[in-house]
Length: 99
Image (cartoon, rainbow, N blue to C red):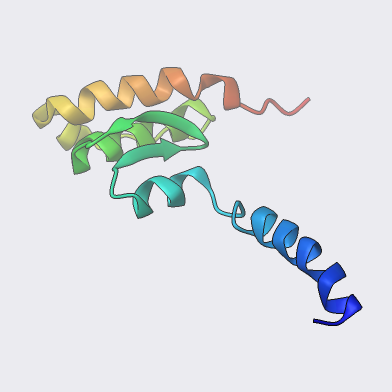
Protein backbone atom coordinates (compact mmCIF):
# COMPACT_ATOMS: atom_id res chain seq x y z
CA UNK A 1 0.00 0.00 0.00
CA UNK A 2 1.38 3.41 -0.90
CA UNK A 3 1.84 6.26 1.55
CA UNK A 4 -1.09 8.19 0.02
CA UNK A 5 -3.42 5.19 0.27
CA UNK A 6 -2.55 4.73 3.95
CA UNK A 7 -3.36 8.37 4.68
CA UNK A 8 -6.62 8.19 2.71
CA UNK A 9 -8.15 5.31 4.66
CA UNK A 10 -8.98 7.26 7.86
CA UNK A 11 -10.45 10.10 5.80
CA UNK A 12 -12.56 7.64 3.83
CA UNK A 13 -13.78 5.94 7.02
CA UNK A 14 -14.76 9.26 8.62
CA UNK A 15 -16.53 10.39 5.44
CA UNK A 16 -18.55 7.19 5.24
CA UNK A 17 -19.51 7.52 8.90
CA UNK A 18 -20.93 11.02 8.42
CA UNK A 19 -22.60 10.26 5.10
CA UNK A 20 -24.41 7.27 6.56
CA UNK A 21 -26.31 9.61 8.92
CA UNK A 22 -27.74 11.73 6.09
CA UNK A 23 -31.28 10.41 6.23
CA UNK A 24 -34.29 11.75 8.02
CA UNK A 25 -35.54 10.12 11.20
CA UNK A 26 -38.74 9.24 9.37
CA UNK A 27 -36.82 7.37 6.63
CA UNK A 28 -34.76 5.53 9.23
CA UNK A 29 -37.85 4.34 11.10
CA UNK A 30 -39.60 3.19 7.93
CA UNK A 31 -36.52 1.28 6.79
CA UNK A 32 -36.39 -0.54 10.12
CA UNK A 33 -39.96 -1.72 9.59
CA UNK A 34 -41.51 0.53 12.21
CA UNK A 35 -44.43 2.78 11.40
CA UNK A 36 -43.67 5.95 13.33
CA UNK A 37 -45.67 8.93 12.08
CA UNK A 38 -44.34 12.48 11.90
CA UNK A 39 -46.01 15.59 10.48
CA UNK A 40 -44.32 19.01 10.42
CA UNK A 41 -41.43 17.40 12.32
CA UNK A 42 -43.74 16.52 15.22
CA UNK A 43 -44.02 12.89 16.34
CA UNK A 44 -47.62 11.69 16.62
CA UNK A 45 -47.29 7.97 17.28
CA UNK A 46 -47.08 4.71 15.41
CA UNK A 47 -49.41 2.32 13.62
CA UNK A 48 -52.05 5.00 12.97
CA UNK A 49 -55.09 4.52 10.75
CA UNK A 50 -55.50 6.40 7.48
CA UNK A 51 -58.29 8.53 8.97
CA UNK A 52 -56.15 9.35 12.00
CA UNK A 53 -53.26 10.53 9.80
CA UNK A 54 -55.63 12.64 7.69
CA UNK A 55 -57.08 14.19 10.83
CA UNK A 56 -53.61 15.11 12.07
CA UNK A 57 -52.73 16.76 8.76
CA UNK A 58 -56.01 18.68 8.54
CA UNK A 59 -55.82 19.81 12.17
CA UNK A 60 -52.23 20.90 11.74
CA UNK A 61 -53.06 22.87 8.58
CA UNK A 62 -55.90 24.54 10.49
CA UNK A 63 -53.62 25.50 13.36
CA UNK A 64 -51.25 27.15 10.88
CA UNK A 65 -54.03 29.52 9.80
CA UNK A 66 -55.81 27.78 6.88
CA UNK A 67 -59.01 26.06 8.02
CA UNK A 68 -59.18 22.49 6.73
CA UNK A 69 -61.56 19.78 7.91
CA UNK A 70 -63.44 16.92 6.29
CA UNK A 71 -66.84 17.42 7.89
CA UNK A 72 -68.11 14.02 6.75
CA UNK A 73 -65.11 12.23 8.30
CA UNK A 74 -65.36 14.41 11.41
CA UNK A 75 -68.96 13.20 11.91
CA UNK A 76 -68.37 9.53 11.06
CA UNK A 77 -64.82 8.69 12.17
CA UNK A 78 -63.77 8.96 15.80
CA UNK A 79 -60.14 8.48 14.68
CA UNK A 80 -60.36 11.50 12.38
CA UNK A 81 -62.13 13.63 15.00
CA UNK A 82 -59.60 12.86 17.75
CA UNK A 83 -56.64 13.32 15.41
CA UNK A 84 -57.97 16.62 14.05
CA UNK A 85 -58.01 18.10 17.56
CA UNK A 86 -54.61 16.57 18.34
CA UNK A 87 -53.08 17.97 15.14
CA UNK A 88 -54.60 21.39 15.77
CA UNK A 89 -53.24 21.51 19.32
CA UNK A 90 -49.80 20.01 18.69
CA UNK A 91 -49.08 22.24 15.65
CA UNK A 92 -50.38 25.46 17.19
CA UNK A 93 -46.85 26.77 17.83
CA UNK A 94 -46.20 26.65 14.06
CA UNK A 95 -48.66 29.48 13.35
CA UNK A 96 -46.78 32.23 11.52
CA UNK A 97 -48.40 35.61 12.18
CA UNK A 98 -47.47 38.29 9.65
CA UNK A 99 -46.91 41.71 11.19
